[in-house]
Length: 209
Image (cartoon, helix red, strand yellow):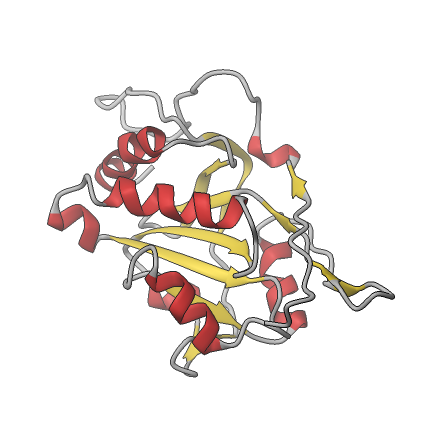
């Protein structure tokens, strides 16, 4: 990564993330499991689309088929992000460390770079390993990355270089949680805590919400 890359992040709060007040039970939960989730309901819900991205091994990676049957957290960001990206992934990693081995095995975390011109697969892998070696890192053409984000209801702005040579990279702070059935009914903003994730992970897996 060029040392001149700026650490600016535009944190966008999309309307689909719902109200910012309190936890709300997610529609579709089983009647026998009425414990509210800490995540924000997504309206409308989001179906996991087919993707054409590349993992950190350089292999084609379709998120939909590769994570079928698992709870999957999808987050867009970049490795030089100074705040939201590292804190979000650190929080999810800490929450996973509080789960049973079975729950951890049933959960996948996918990070998609919003700065593909500077985040090489090797750079992404080294960065993700600071949080959890099991986290999946993806890159690809800007068209494919932006297309995936748009399918999830997330706005995108292509990184721009300023006259002084620095770069501005913008991304949405929302983590999208896909239940094992491939549908996202809940998301998490930058304000989500380790406790929020830790509380919701087993519920999302158990109830298929």
